[in-house]
Amino acid sequence: MPGPRAPVEPRASGERRPLLERRPRGPRRWWRAAAAAVLLVEMLERAAFFGVAGNLVLYLNSADFHWAGEQASRAALVFLGASYLLAPVGGWLADVYLGRHRAIALSLLLYLAASGLLAATAFPDGRSSFCGEMLSLPLGPACPSPGCPHTSPAPYCAPILYAVLLLLALAASSVRSNLTSFGADQVMDLGRHANRRFFNWFYWSINVGAVLSLLVLAFIQQNINFLLGYSIIVGCVGLAFFIFLFATPSFITKPPTGSQVSSMLKLALQNRCPRRWRRHSARDPPGAQLLPDQRSPQPGPSPQEDIANFQVLVKILPVLVTLVPYWMVYFQMQSTYVLQGLHLQIPNIFPDYPANRSAALRAQGGGYKIPEAWLLLANVVVLLILVPVKDHLLDPLLLRCKLLPSALQKMALGMFFGFTSVIVAGVLEMERLEYISHNQTVSQQIGQNTYYAAPLSIWWQTPQYLLIGISEIFASIPGLEFAYSEAPRSMQGAMMGIFFCLSGVGSLLGSSLVALLSLPGGWLHCPEDFGNINKCRMDLYFFLLAGIQAATALLYIGIAGRYERVAQGPASQSCPRRGSG
Image (cartoon, rainbow, N blue to C red; front, top):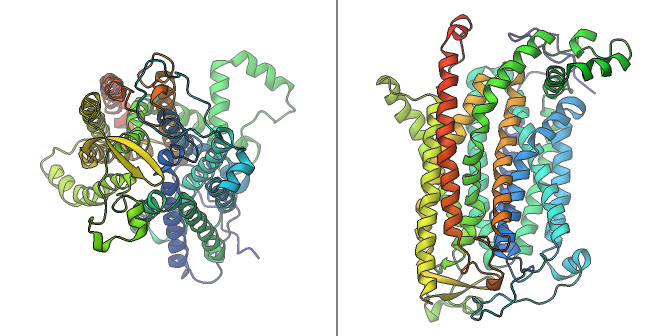
């Protein structure tokens, strides 16, 4: 039985509170339970997401599938890119048809089904049922003779795995685009302080989920088996779905109120193709071409506000588009950085004492290997430590000294740290290949697979992970701040979707670059070294990314400088901005 209707209440930007809104009966004493349920669901969903993304390259490169290194990296980049690129789809469906509560519930159900399919590919009977049988092609060292075959076989089970990964990406992106604002709805009546506290805890829930996933799931997947690891992911998603449904009576839910995306597309079509639009409108029944606010007093901005919002969008988009090469660099952390780490010497977790070694440890070659995905923790730890330090110490100090940079200036600094990270990765790869060229390799067993690595410790990768974590503080977080604060209030949700969508574009462009360089003659084309990357030139790939990032950073500095000059002009004096610094 729905609760009482909330009155229509005008807001500062012209928006109105939805005409229909379900609230828990009685006093608002349920907000803690509602907010806690949202935070638990987010933590479990992020644990599941990182459980898939963290070791996806290792899974596809394993003896179960025998994907080449570049094929596995490309699949990881496609999955990560799609999980961001599809974010506007889930938000649009929630705004226009489903509402956020129903969209989240259906997304979690899709998440559960897709993660179950992924787990089914992790045991032999499931693989043979979905994919058929695979020809045996073991991992091995670089081919010593020039007469070796130079064509990579088609990746085994690729259509099924890509379909499963895209379903997972769609579900994860829909949860990402709706759960944040749905959680904020639960505390919206408690004031801005409660809102800030919720977002702080929401951010920490994301990182707690990532830490638990990388510590526990990555270890299980690498050292025990992927079936158990992926089964735990199914359990996490199932528990998140149960918690969300169980907490439904305590939630504030709102009906769909329409999407700004449709209005923006109509305005763009009117501006670009006015004649075609007039012919199309002439065929419509009377009133069909009117915007929703012209037909009836439904919630949403007026046509004049739509035009103003479109003009703001045209100004903001060039700034956000120049961040795309940064995202190309950022997502290497979960693709080519992982592949590089598998070919560095990975130490054992437990000491190699004969008296302390069980049969399982002896089978592992002296102990469980440190999961390569654990290096992703360097990025998470940097965020958990430096964000509070920056917020409580560094920013107030710079503010007192009048040296606090704007969000746009911070984003430029983030690009510099991303550039430095990929340069460090390229230098490390050059050193690794130097050992390989002198036939100095070590054979190491990771799970059921053998990799031929350089005698360089994997800990040499720590600086590049730390640098990419620092870059996220200065590029990603201020980027969200800029997109949110500069957007009109009625477009803040749409702008978040655009921001995440462009992040996905960066990942997919990185995947396309890997595919291009994997063609015959490319730096990443090394089929004679199937299963390893010792005959590839991944160092040149890293340096190419650094060059793209540097060139785009120069373009970004020009665009951002022009944006700030315009914002400080007469328009900003007559219409004060919300701070973006």
